Length: 153
Image (cartoon, rainbow, N blue to C red; front, side, top):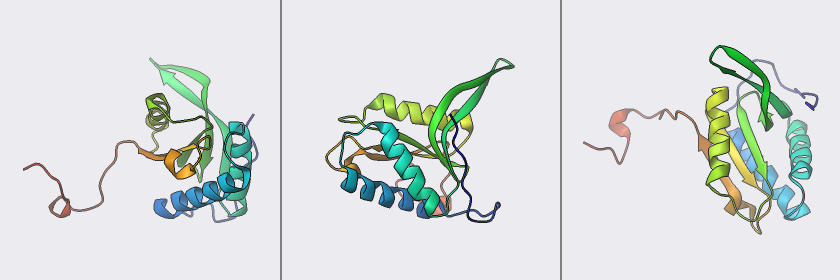
């Protein structure tokens, strides 16, 4: 079920990705401290979405995604936990520890939706910061090639 979208700012307004991801992380940490680890993923999703909407973000929960494969469209092939401001995918877990499958899942969602940034948040651990991962798809650095470090020559 897709829940109502909330918009408090201009339709075309874009926000800095560092600010958005920072707001999500700060809110998730407060939520984890208050509610504690180990609740069902849905609880964290509902509360996090509500808090982000209160901050003025457009939040879509359980957003269905269609897949086109070999010229055939498969409606609602999967759902993403949360889409913030139409571009940031958030995948929520409540497990003891994240594993490679969780990262692959989010990366696949990013690739199939052609989005570039996603957050994987695990509320199941003792410290939320240990279960928070930023995943990027098709990353393009913003710095000039001459200014980048660790380049092969």
